[in-house]
Length: 124
Image 1 (cartoon, helix red, strand yellow):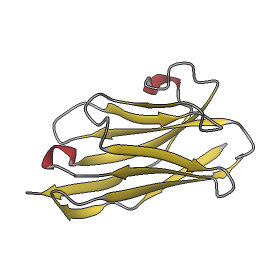
Image 2 (cartoon, helix red, strand yellow; image 1 turned 45 degrees about the vertical axis):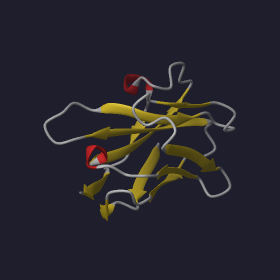
Image 3 (cartoon, helix red, strand yellow; image 1 turned 90 degrees about the vertical axis):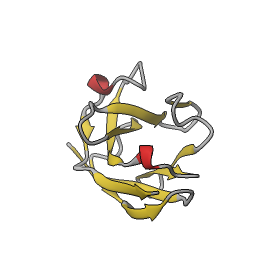
């Protein structure tokens, strides 16, 4: 089993940057792909960004491409999501997910493990 814990959320002003972290514990020797998803109030969960085990493959939702950056440090068992030029539309609960053998990084159903989420609120 793998446990995922997100951190770094909070209330920030529009235009600011936010850095979220997701720390994995447990059976971290498994080659996990890591993804970030978000759920805005009243909306369904949506894919944000994902990164393969070695970081060679990164993929982003069109809505965040160019403003969000995903990265990882396997030595620290941590994945990161940087939000730049935040807008009120980025307000959501952000969840990290981990999965073994994920073929479609944007598909939440392929991930095995999920964190509890961290709330990000962007004020205008």
